[in-house]
Image (tube, rainbow, N blue to C red; front, side, top):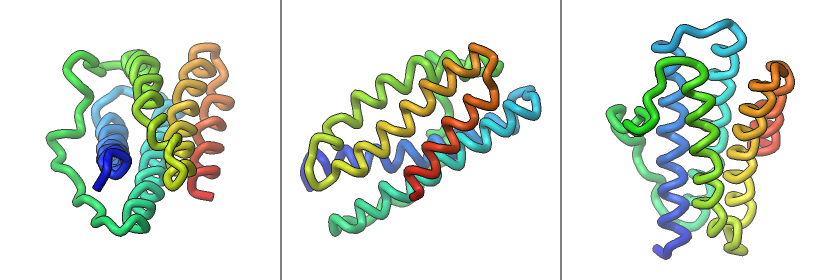
Length: 153
């Protein structure tokens, strides 16, 4: 395995954790119907992206990692999430960092499409936060669903 394979493994595990994380928030946060719908769409986007990354790992001839234990699915301690706005703040901080992590994957010719998909879904989160904070809940959700459609494509 090389550094791109390692980055793909990390990305895959991150997507599995992300799906579980968003599903757990559905159970723990006091949400409006629109917010719950958005969290389900986030979880679906993470699952779709994870499936695409996992398939690419297998195509590269590597075993897809087993799902990680539930205890790893919480947000880092520096991002406690007790309210919807905490989640928006978390996404606002985390998504740009994740894009930086995914750039080397996108720069690799053999993994470019997967790297671009990973970046696409983080850009969708950034757009979601901006639209949600501007009061465009429907537009925010449309960004997530469009990314999911492109990645699952």
